[in-house]
Image 1: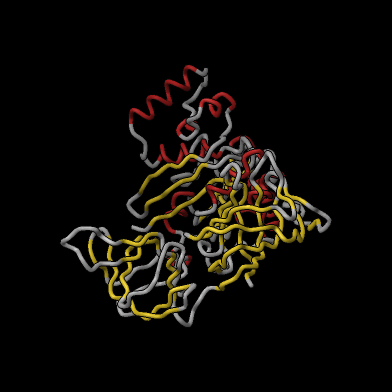
Image 2: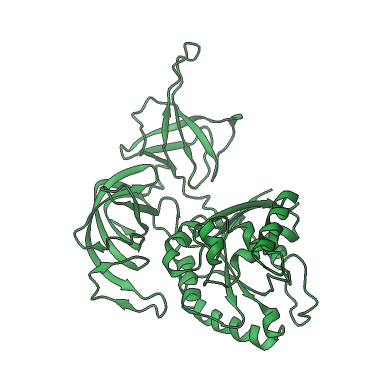
Length: 417
């Protein structure tokens, strides 16, 4: 079975945690003791129903305020597919947490309250999912029970969102009317909305095509660790461990090691279960090469005629995540790109982007918490990079404050030179 990673997105109190709880409950993916604990907590809070949002909102502050603060990951499976859910917060203060959860997702569930329609945070999260190149997007018009399951309300919201999505890069968009509280169109089709002839949410999640989302053309293997066993029984083993970012590698293939530029061939590919005939994303493997080359952490294995750009000047869209200090032109930071570390200086801020109107403010001189802008960076060592639209692994990086060692930004490479 293949694995689908999906993240929830949307404004505060649109029902993201309740949706995930309902999905887990109706698909029989929670244990009896978990359900009993949620029922007991619901009674102690005075709720008249079992509050399924408590399955994901585990922090005390989350339960007291009734909002999601941190990203909660849940796992479940059906006979057709395995799933990893990232329940992300909707509050604008925690937009950075939403970016974290959506950065590795194959699909984004964007919830909209049927009573309120599209709000600022709905547009913000839709834009961020587009910026993060999430390949599939599902708009869930939630709380349809509170508008008497009215078709015209659903179609109005669907049309408004579709018009906004046309300005974004959303290659695959589906729209589903649901009621997370009552389970309408979550696992099975709802009799309350006979005018809707599409699939239920779970059916769509099980059948959405994700096999072609992976880049199997550009071989990119960032080296994470060099394996040299010290055992006397293994005297001649040198392997390079890491996770395949893209492409397919096989023993006998001609490859190049960057940044040195030396070429060789793959002698073998090993896993924890033994040798394999090929490696593809997101497999974690150890690659053995035929020649003795100087290869270390931060280097990258690729094809000789299909290489990433080796560059120290990078144009990127940057999402700022630090609430204490803004990003300013001339600021110096540490960069973590694949397995390579570098230091960088912000050379230029081209513009700050208004995620609601998509207006570019070219007079901006800084980026504050949750703001997004296009920047030009100069790094101390070359990055082995692709455009983010082509490869999310070799096209993404994080920015670290060297003083506090905190992650203060996430970047998506637009151009490297």
